[in-house]
Length: 392
Ligand code: SAH
Image (cartoon, helix red, strand yellow):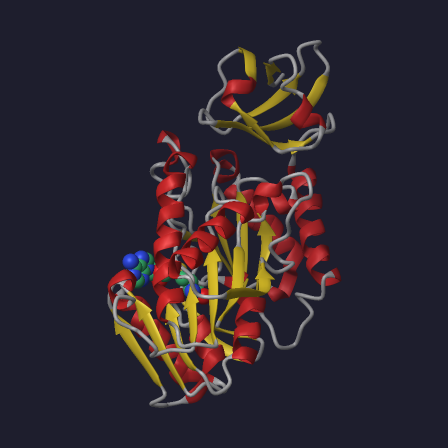
């Protein structure tokens, strides 16, 4: 028998609308003492069954796996993972000849809250954000091997530091199946070297794929500045036609990686230069030097309580770019903080523009690609927000 959790009257409503999170404040009573990562059953105040999910003693107390009264066992997870695989086929992602890097499982977007899997040309890199999934990582790995068959060479678990709370603290990164050196992946026919063990997140920011393509199309003849460049993803696409491309990142290893990736695609090309320095400092002195600027900072806010600071950060950053870009310039500006809504981000950019007094138009509004699906019941899964601005 699983432990029962009864919600306060009225708090069942979001669950009935299939929202996959239950906050601790919604809980009326827990019958028993669930351990971190245990499966628990949710009931409304009239004792009607609502859902089953993983328990975590945190502000998101339950991450719901199913709204039906079924056992989340191996065949349940096989079915969910299989659906994620089929979805990427239907969406035309995993069948593209010019692409062998994509997100295979995107947490809530694939009905598997707490589980991320990225596919890098034969290597699946798993990242667990709940102890519930961390506990069954070996089973998840076996299911991936079973379902992807000979497409899969290795499964690497990169959950160190991402599994919350005490019992997850000793998660260590390791291969759960096979092994592999870093791989070269192909994205829209460009090559990137992926090292999941030393890289940030699972090794690459796959979510910017479509936005990088648009950027590539818009950089022809322009002087491009790629702020927060990391692997040089945007820089590589810009190099196809830009007059010059400058990559900025505060991390030396990121700068090295960006140089390597540009060289792998364009050889020793002096149009590209990379600077290891703080973005805010670099942006102090760029007046009229660039006519295309990319601002893709790390998540400024990971939690709601630092939201105001984060919004100020976006404002400051965007103001520096809008103020100094050449007339007729274009800015690709992003926020990947889940707690920053599309509206909030847009307000920050609006405030930044207003402070400069320049005329700014929105050319495009950007988001994440289909392998990072947004569940209609979980608007929070739309975490990547971008605006392409034309500055007169
Ligand atoms: N645009 C990248 C992803 C950016 S990730 C892509 O398409 O792949 C964010 C990057 O910002 C990281 O590489 C990190 O090293 C860098 N960074 C974080 N704080 C910074 C700062 N203050 N100045 C410059 N770079 C910074």
